[in-house]
Image (cartoon, rainbow, N blue to C red; front, side, top):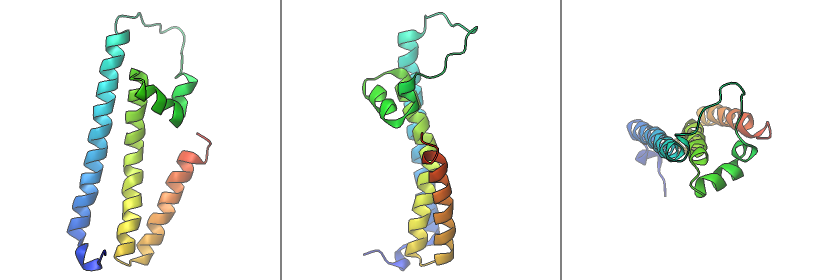
Length: 128
């Protein structure tokens, strides 16, 4: 069972730092791998800067990104890495809610919960 005495401020800071470090490293690794795959497959294709072509529809939603990444498509892996980069601070706030609840610091639980709700609404409330 988790006890308040087990969670010192220093231990929480180390866990949060490791969480942020792992998220950024995973994201960077995925983006580099995806970039390398994309360059190997499309590096010699001529670039057309006269017409803007946005991301294909399948790379604009979570299901399509995961499918493309599982198919080892470079763009899908890059997009997945960017999603992990976006998810990293959200995970940090979610962990903070959990840590403050263990410490029974209800003011910070409510503040962090509000921040988490705003982050989640901004990510999912727009229908992405």
